[in-house]
Length: 473
RNA sequence: GUCGGUGUAGUUCAAUGGUCAGAACGAGGGACUCAUAAACCCUAGACGGUAGUUCGACUCUACCCAUCGACACCA
Image 1: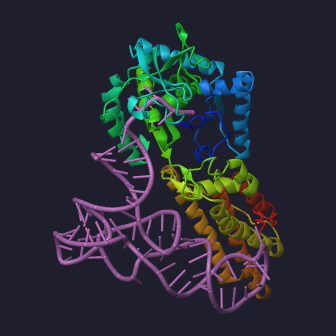
Image 2: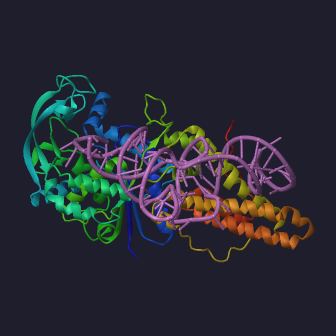
Image 3: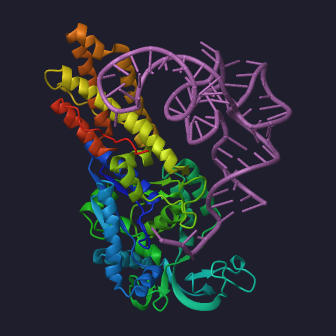
C-alpha cells in the first residue's frame, strides 16, 4: 500500500486565518485521519507563507523586526491547528532555513535545465499595489484603478521561468483524468494551457523586494513568490534529501494537494512545470474547493459579513465547526453560509440529532443494563464517498443512521417494554448501544473528540454530559 | 467577447430516457415521553423558458434567459 501525502496551500500571513482556509485544512485533516484509521502511512503537512513585500512593509510600519512579526503570525496559524484539532505531521514555514535551501536548490536545478533566464522587463508599476499593470488594466492617464494614482514606467531586470517550454508536457499531464478534481476544473486548466503559456517572472530586484529568499548566484535579486512558496510542498519532506520522507511519501507515495479554486494556474500548471523541470515527480492529484460566501455576497470586512473560524469555534465548539464546514459546505462549488443557517444546522443535527440520540440511548443503557455492552468486533470503517472527496455525502450517510436509530426507538419503545419484558428490552437497548458505537466509529476522523466521548460512554455504560449544548436564545 | 459550470419544493441538495422526481432543514397537523420541550408519524410544496429528437425527457440536442467561474504573474 502506497504511503499517502496530503497538503494544503500555505496561507499568507498578512491577516488572520480565514474560513476558507479552515475549510481546506479540515478537509485535509479528515482525509489524513481517515487514511490513518485504514492503516495507511500518512504525511499531512501545512504551514505558512511568510515572505513578500507586503509582510515586510507591515512589519516595518510597526517598527517590528520582520522575523519576529512573522513568528507571531505563524504562531497564530499554529493556534488554529489546536483550535480545530488538526493532526498535521509537519508545519512548514517559508522562513525555515531548510526551506530556503530547498527553494534555492530547485531554482538551481531549473536553471541547470536551461529554464531560467534573465530578461529586462518594463511596465507600468503602481507603487501602492507593488504590481506591474498592463496598459488596458489602467484607467485614463495610466492611473491605477485601486489607488487612483498614476503608475510609473519602470524598467527592471528579472529572472523568468520558461513555462513556454512545458506546453506539451502540461497538456499531457492534464490529459489524465484525476489529476484535478473536480473534473470540470481540469477542463479549465486544459483550456488555459492550450491558450498558450507565457513565461513568468520569478524574481524581483532587491530594492523592490527585500524580504525573501536570495536568488542563488545573484545578490541583487530575490525570489518572487513562486519558487519560494510552492517549493514548500517538497521541502516539508526534507527535499532535496532523498531516501527519507521525500522518497517514501512523494516519489513512491501518493500525493494530494488541496487548494482553492483560484489556485489552478499555480498548483496544476506552474508548479507542475517547475517539478518537471527539476526532475521531480508531478503531483498525483490536486483537489480544488470552492469559496464560502455569506448572505449571497463575498465575505469582506467592509460588508461586515466575515465569519472567522475562531468565532465559529467559540460559538459551536471545535467538532461542530468541523461538522458544519464539511457537511454543509459543498466540497467543490461555492457555498453560502450565515450564522442563521449554521445555528439551524447545529441545532437540528447536532443538538437534536446526534447529541440527543446519544443521550437517550445511553440513559436507557445506564438505567436498564447491568453491564456495558460488549463490542465484539470493530468493523472496519470505510467511507467510499471520501475517496471522491465528497464529504457531504459521507456525513449524510452517518446522519441517516442517526435518524434510523431514533425511528427504531419510536417503533420498539424499549422504555415501555422494560416494564413488561425486561430481557427483550435489554436486547433492544444493547442493539441501540452497538449502533451508537458504530456511529462513533465513523465519526472518529471527522469529530474526534465527540467520537471519543461516545466510545467512552459506551465502554462505561454511562450517559455522558450533553455532547452539544443548546444555543442560548 | 470566447470557453465552461450551474439553474429541481421556502432553503440546501439528490436521482433516473418511461411505475406516484427523492431527502434534509424549515412550515402546518398528530401522537408519545427514554432523551438536550428532544425524537416519531402525517400533510403541503419543485423539474428557468422555448423549440426539437423520441412511442416517451426533468434527464439528449439547439436557442433564449438567469447565475457563477476561467481567459495568467493577484496568495
